[in-house]
Length: 289
Image (tube, one colour):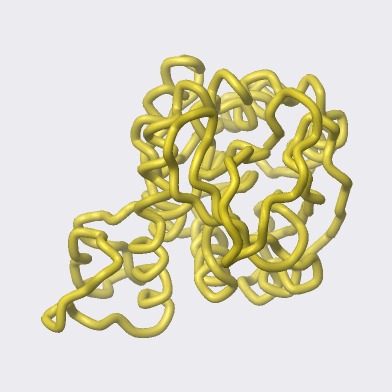
């Protein structure tokens, strides 16, 4: 959810141009699915196991259809992203743990989310190694019926967040196959966890978020606004391989609606001076009946 310290960085090149060091602005990353032994399908549906997670598949690899095919492909593409967040977990936590103290815009949207959210569990999907977005919401409402659970596809990030926030629960899990029953949750925070895949895969990930939300449950998503994608190969001296996808406001809002939500707010703000130089897009929505 935030940017790194220091003067604003110039925009990095679009896809196909030489890559520059990455300055992720929001911990969220957290967000592409990691290859499970078997991915989750619809209730009662048999699901074929995935392969090792490499992008290249042999002729004997089973084919996947429909939404599961999209999620399976996203999982294969996200391996480098997960590996990057495993590698930079400690540095990432140090960079982002206190960022909300400098982001009044984000704080206000999180307060609105917490006030509108019905009783029940809240997921911080793509919680990152700092776990600070979920921690902020948990501290706003300490009722027993409002547990906040951090979810991250990087096991190292989830473990570090658990150590830094011992009062909260954290699990390693994929946004494309969340380890929760349908309708189990009252709210979902998705801060920068929907920025690592193309539009088609992102639509499927939004559908998975809707699956675990009960009717009337709340979603607050934050992504980078714009068009196209950027590739980054370095983060503070650590080698990474991450492609960040920008979202056009009306297109992303339409995807949220199509996933089964009533969109209540679509807002864009300019970057703070200390953030990576992209506009930020926030969508607040309610799970429709």
